[in-house]
Image (cartoon, rainbow, N blue to C red; front, side):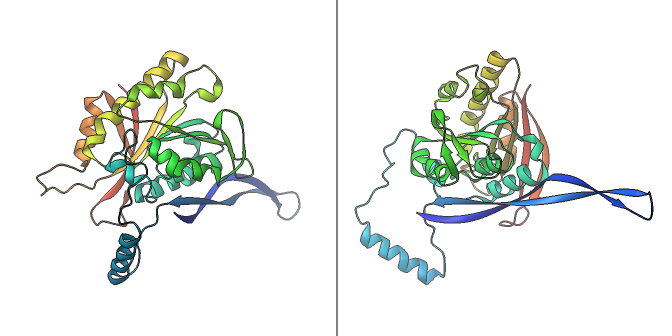
Amino acid sequence: MQTDVHRIRCSRRHREDVCRLGGESETRRRVEEVEEFVIKISHRKLLVGTEEEEEKGKEEDDKEDEFAIDPYFFDDGYSVAATTGFARVWEGASVFTDFLVQECPNLTLRKNVVELGSGVGLCGLAVAIANEANVTLTDLPSVVEGVLRQNITQNSTSLTENGWHRVIGPQGGLARAVALNWEKPMDCHHLTASEKYIDAVDVIIAAECIWLADLLDCFCETLNILFEREKKLRSRTPQCFICCRDRSRKDSKVKIFASEEMVEAAFSRHALAFDVMREFPSTIEQNRCVKIYSLSKK
């Protein structure tokens, strides 16, 4: 495993200073206070360096692990999509984190948040730490046990009841990891199983986790169940914000990656109204962008 340090900056807090100018006149000056939080994120080691160095590293790994197998290979829900959850912080997750913490902190400030497809957990942890939210980070069991739970623990100060961790920061919120397989969407009932305040869902977030075409329908089904459960228990529907980056190739005959058109068609097919809140140019691919959507039930 490799551990990276992510520095999250936010300027949410303000104060007013009074400046007296010649006698009795005075002006009020709004002062912005910038805070920085350091989040440690562990993930499976990635090969970096020259092609020659990478090839040498692969050869050494092959010698050491000639008969090795991923320990989570036989787990429920294991898939190609699951393996990416161990690997790194993806571009969309990084962009979405800055958006929620720096640009629009009020979307999640001091709210109960459920994150779908958390992966290594940067986005959900940043929201818990910087925005003082109570965040349930979810992913497949293999990802939760392999990396997500560890990242929550190493960014926490204490363990409270029912698996909740008090995260770092002067007024940090709470975070917990819960296994959730979208192919069995009814399992998400346990996320809203009681009428306790801590089990309420105010906001649902998801950062670049519907990049495969096969994930679209089960993601939307899971989202609808969360909407319906919250409506039934608390007579309201959570807000939902997600980000996506189109990885598809128009000249490809096999539609493996979810295109922008496929994503929006899936929303409509599952009676989800959507609006594009922001678009950020990709720093990885030219003429591509990271889109941030707001979703609601039609």
